[in-house]
Length: 192
Image (cartoon, rainbow, N blue to C red; front, side):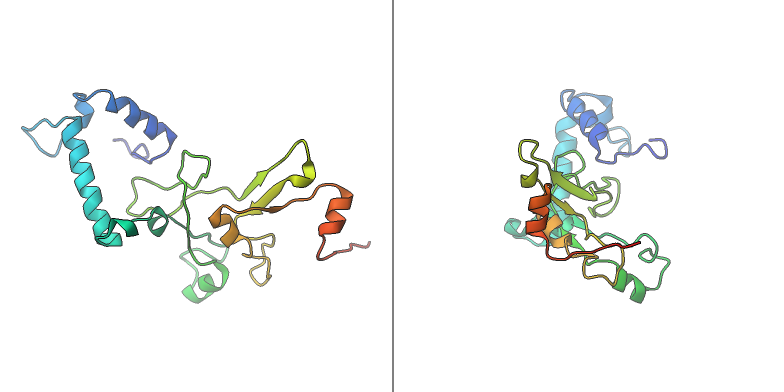
């Protein structure tokens, strides 16, 4: 596979696999690391299931009741300036919210992408905001941001929505003047 074109688990690769499943004798199923042996779809899928069971048992234990996607698939947002691996750990610990278990995947409504070619299932991309807009009643609309409404790590609103976002919850998003006045808890007045 050319560099940068490996299986990533995104929609394109799901379509590739879907089509290959219809071709049990396609040369794509053959494991090239076994010279003189030509595998087909069923053998490769059986091997994949056995490997998946071994991986799940090693990472999550023997009891299949404990095999929850969120225990492997976690969202761990990083501060864009101070959250990266080149910054000392103590600083990263102050500015990066703790990881949260999430559902979803790269090609579903609850979009939380991960890289199928990586060694982990950590979220690599996710929506920064989710919203539901009720066009018949704008005051019934809801929303949630990935972390919080402030980009400042010292603000109480820096990561106060992250738990709700991870759980798929949303908050009221009033639209009309009357609804926003009724819902207000804090008022910021800007004067020239």
